[in-house]
Image 1: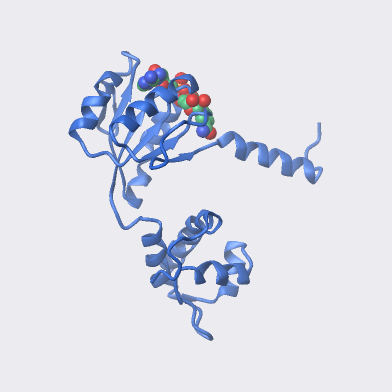
Image 2: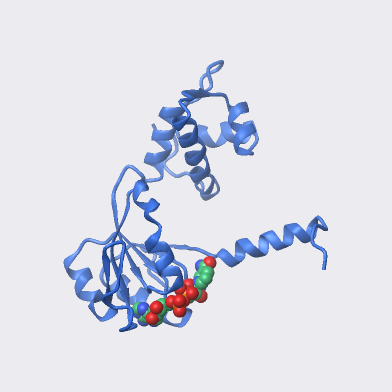
Length: 214
Ligand code: NAI
């Protein structure tokens, strides 16, 4: 069970990676693993792993290692993956459609319920059996349906006005793909996605090691 009520964001950012590797171990019928073995696979040091996992329970046993299933379950719970989330997408262009088509989010409990766009040419088209609705219907949809997470995939200049509607209707979780810092009240959680930042990091690392020839 949880030792600390609040886990640092640095640890939280590493948890999905633990979750993924432990899931792979489970699929391969491996039921226990030492922090050293986990470290070899995952790429964090064994002491980092012990420190991280110690934040939320006494899972490691001297001479035994970690019980993979127990740890995987606990990390799932900490990440909130033992719950079901209703999600919607606003903006059904390139990114919105790609996210909508990625059905694997469902296996973690994120269920896509509706998609909205303002382009009349897109309204009525189905993605994975979900019909794109006119964004003018967004407010009334939110009045009548429980939505836990909204995914913003509209152009930057439209993102804040979409966020304002979502906030006014009580949405507390926003996964934002638009390259802008949305202004929202403190009780609304925004998680920004920046593919370009990841690409820039790759470029830095290539150049740092002189692996790029121009
Ligand atoms: P897109 O132009 O293909 O799609 C945007 C869609 O939003 C269009 O279908 C448009 O009709 C719709 N839209 C515009 N205003 C709207 C509104 N007020 N309400 C509802 N729908 C509205 O653009 P794309 O390539 O899909 O990019 C979407 C967003 O994602 C942009 O902000 C872009 O900068 C961002 N982006 C983010 C990346 C990341 O790594 N986070 C990577 C690439 C793009």
